[in-house]
Length: 370
Image 1 (tube, rainbow, N blue to C red):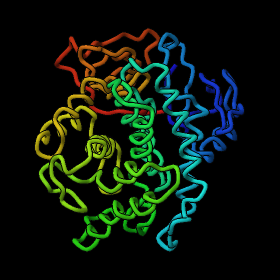
Image 2 (tube, helix red, strand yellow):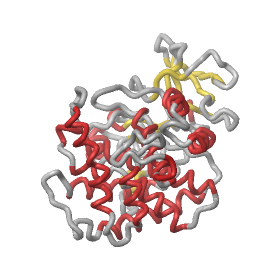
Image 3 (cartoon, rainbow, N blue to C red):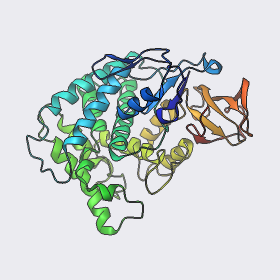
């Protein structure tokens, strides 16, 4: 099985996993042959990737960290917030009415799903798939990724209560909710920001806090994460230039995860960078911008190249991540499916990057339709 962006899937592909809606109903069943109309509809529903059968990868079993129904409910909840709020909408104490309960219920499902395999490496199957095509998709992708990173890492520590996990999870999920109050043209600007524009962007942290702080069901700590996730240890962050322990530990962790997720995804003003380069940047700034123990926690427990991810190697060959190396999470085993000259292999072979140190992963995601 392999993961392919929906927009790159072709009619005739067979589905490797059942697709559910946010209510748990089957949208498309296992092994159904996809048609062009199905693919168009799935894209419209916000389903950005699909599990596709491939006889060359039948032995690779990809386990999503959360159930598909939970993922759809998460996506639906975030989409409703994005639709309701805008720079022209004034928010007050009643703005989030009904949303607090909705997010509590959704986050409870996320925690339950992630606890099922709590000792497994953190592995997000949707990472690095394709650039977000619009601001809502970008908002939802980032929120879901950071939420699952933070919640799973907290679960793996084994020291947090369920209330703690809820605060961390909701803080991570809603850390950027204030961005929906910013002008769209500012968020989509490709050129560098002016000083005034950058100051406007910085307001999203305060907006998020104001939207969440009085909402019934949303812990105040979660609102604090929205407020502080851009603060940095040396005081160079915003909005209040807090330093060190002035920044809540949850916000420190979420700030690291948000920075990493931003680096490995394409933005309007720059291309994505490879995950191992992003990790190097975190380490280079550990102790100055980021908590070094939290960076180590991320490095030791996150599979930055998850199973099923399509990758291109420095040799020009391309394939799929087939196995993880627990002793070297950043250097997995890659099953080569296509030669450097673009020839599809009927008999793939594997390269263990932890043993073949002169070969690197250079790009992630599908480059060509297979």
